[in-house]
Length: 202
Image (cartoon, rainbow, N blue to C red):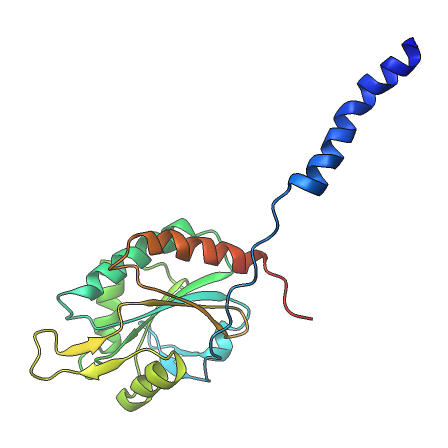
């Protein structure tokens, strides 16, 4: 009986581990929704270098639309992104993309100044500009977010205040209104982490 008792005592932790692993481990959350495929785009960053959607393949990236003279929502978006890039500064698989809706004034030099204001990390956070019609088309038809020039309005442009999360294949995987709902920041972080461990579809 002593041998049997000793065997039970020794094997109990192993049996408990198997039970816990099979019955108590929570199921993985379902895949994030796949919304739209971002079309090919070709823009210029704050250093005057060309950046295309092909350059972002294989990277998870967060996108927002802004303009440097924006007095309202843009500084809030940029502050969030500045903090996020700092948290992911050692994670090479993540980038951040800010696209201006005011390319007439947001020159390469202006974007560089704006990037420096928010301590943008080189090759981590791109501020992009290009032809106005192309940018507006990319926003509305590609990222599926509104952008309207509001000549008589206080902010001059009406644009989305949502951040857009894109996976390594260029597929939009989430929209996050981080300005109006601060809890969405946590949701965005969680979604990024899920994409980093997500296995590609077979």
